[in-house]
Image (cartoon, rainbow over all chains, first blue to last red; front, side, top):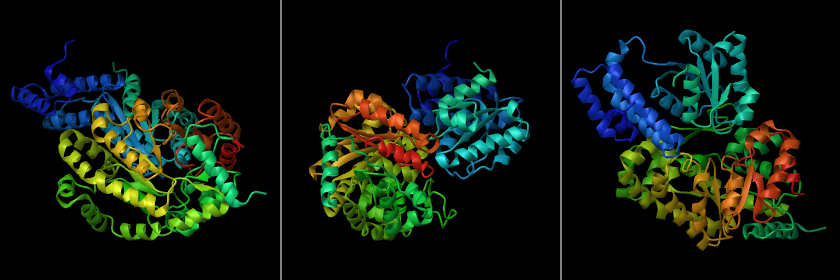
Amino acid sequence: MSTSPLAQALGDLEEDKAIVLVADKLAKGEPALAILEELQAGMNIVGERFESCEYYLSELIYAADIFKKAGAPLQEELKRSPQTSYGTLVLGTVKNDIHEFGKDIVATVMSSNGIKVIDLGVNVEPQAFVVAIKENKATLVGMSCLLTTVFDDMREAIQTIKDAGLRDQVTILIGGGPVDQATADYVGADHYCRTAQDGVIAAKNVLGVS
Amino acid sequence: MATTEELYAVHEKRIRDAVALKTPDRVPVIPNGPAWPGRAMGVKISEIATNPPVSRKAIVDAYTGLGDIDGIQSPAYHVCTLSMMWLSKVKVPGRDLPDDELWQVDEAEIMKLEDYDAIVAEGFGPWLERYYKERLPGTLETFGAFAATIPDALALCRERGVVPFTPAVATIPYEYFCGGRSMKEFLLDLFRHGDKVQAAMDAALPVLIENMRGAIRGLGLMGLWIGGWRSAGEFVSPRLWNRFVFPYYKAMVEAALEEGAIPVLHFDADWTRDLERLREFPKGKCVLSLDGKTDIFKAKEVLGDHMCIMGDVHPGLLALGSPEEVTAYCTRLISEIGPAGFILSSGCDVPIDAKYENVKAMVEAVL
């Protein structure tokens, strides 16, 4: 499949061009959902370049911001579309940790890759994950932390999800500064994500998105 | 029995030998971090955060109690240093958090886009003073009072025969601005307002270098941290790193060396991509201190004949591992990264919840 000029512009981080192309397409009456898909194809290019170390976190953030800005005029129409996301991720920094940045990056990058994010914020109580999973019928949970002292809080949050009988219906992704595979094993998560892009790949695999 | 002066001399020589890439009589060990000593000594974290006489005693007592350590990276601590360096608010135990919880940086966009122009127009020094007064009130005064206590912390180390290796921290404009703007906004600035950011960085650098020179002279420092956190290659592409990061480190390292201090590149996060560039720093004069995220074995391969390496017992291992696992990892570090040109240490701070027997196992690995 050939790459559209809009997808290419986003992939190449050409902000002004991407914004103009979206405006042109809307003016021509192209459906918002089709334009959104082109922007998501652009984010795929960004993801591939991140994987091949051509792009880094700096470019992931810039691309996601271009995506948000260029996609803003589509929002009204998209609200009326039946399905605009592949699935839902409930996301939060676990209890007793107020660090936001890593969690925010994941939210930004996931959203721009077609995954609906329910962002619970920081210092999230275990029960809040349970409530959000139920309310949003989420199949993905993301937990973040920057402190080793909250590994037990992360473990407790996962146990609470298990106690609520929801463990089998969600895939749990974790990440953050001190987190590694040993932490994932300790807290009982399904995947340790070293980067936000690792999270996107894991989420798409779970959701069966190619 | 050796006097404390003799012990100090042995420890200092061991460290200087390692920095000069020689093989000391044994690998030096220099633990780091103020929070774990609080837990180990039964001192509330609020006291560690805000009471320098209490924190220095806890730090020195806790680490010297582990065995014959060679030094402590910093025996002096006050949580206000985080606000000073990252232009950020910090949630402080006993004030914003329960008494015995760890402090946390409260990242928010308190530096605005227009501040880059203001820095150039006003000069970085006056702008910074105004910033602290208006947006982080009390920080400057608290830091001034803390700084006046640092000589006492250095003296306490000397009395115990251990080297206060890096009791001051300098860093590049990138880290200041990134903290003040919040990381996401700052990274977007690099793309959208790169010239403005660079002009402000160029205005800030000479002031930061002068401040660093003053600290080295005033405290008679053997070494100091030149810290890097969010300027790691893990976060920024080479194009941005080459423009906004490396030239500023180079200038700071050169200035520290001119003052006769050992620049300890305290580089948290993953710097593996750019290890080769660190060969541009003079051979046998600097230390690269890693936190477990950079591949230390790759660092040895790339830099082992050029720069002393310090680290990197990972916080996760110290918190969750067993003493046997810590010993096994330290033994590997000593044989594969050392014995020449290597200093054993925790990767960044010993975490607050590290098991006592794990920290002890780290120290005992060199004995």
